[in-house]
Length: 369
Image (tube, rainbow, N blue to C red; front, side, top):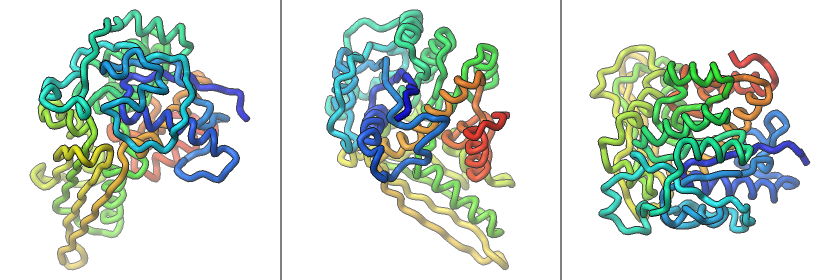
């Protein structure tokens, strides 16, 4: 068994954090048994069970003050439980800076579905940075809600102060922003982002289908992707004013593959509605319309039904290990390969096969850029 460890901090102890932590212990139990669901069992000597949570922040009263092993199962978390036994870690969830992380409309929904704001004292930027240093965190993974632009940047700033690698799973443009990327590079700190692309989710599936049609000579005229779900992410996104970067991120992930301009009215990609009883299930409806040989029309429709947060964790587990590997090698700044492979809005978009090849080369020790 590897003795190398990756110490991580988590901002936002929601469903994605729950699936990630469950997965660490699930694969630890399965390490001598053939187990499915991993893109890489080992990266740079690191296996999933070499990841250890050493700090965490949230703003919900049912998370703050609880051991992380309990907090991940507390409401409003509703993802699948595939690993019941999570040992006490001694890591208690701290109260993060609220900023724009609490959508006001959640007050109108039952507490079992929505955030309930903790009255505990918030950690300042200096305190967060201090905790990161004192805990020995190598990497912070950002899971604050969509639309929490200030909160996402708050944790990015803390990572810069503490010298901790940053993974931005949310659609706030930080790693893909030139100024932020330069700051991480000048400090020699690895950064991965922005907006996580699930293992087999709506975005990666839509991209693969789009590339298939393009490779086969089909002219794509129109496409949409409609998503519904029942977790707090979908409830949060009912406030459409919080969706500007999310919609841009998801749309560009697909449109970046199309080598000709499309009328914006003919490409619609974005969250659609909240259905509470779906819980952490996400259902995506994808349609592409195009023209075959002789301009004969063709239509393709697909329905994808997945548990949203484990789908995300299946990618985060690789992003964390690549960020640590970059740290071990003294590589700072935006990591183009793993960002392109695991994120919807990376600094540079590549086709998925190119991004995968770049990741394999990076793991093997070739230059990141």
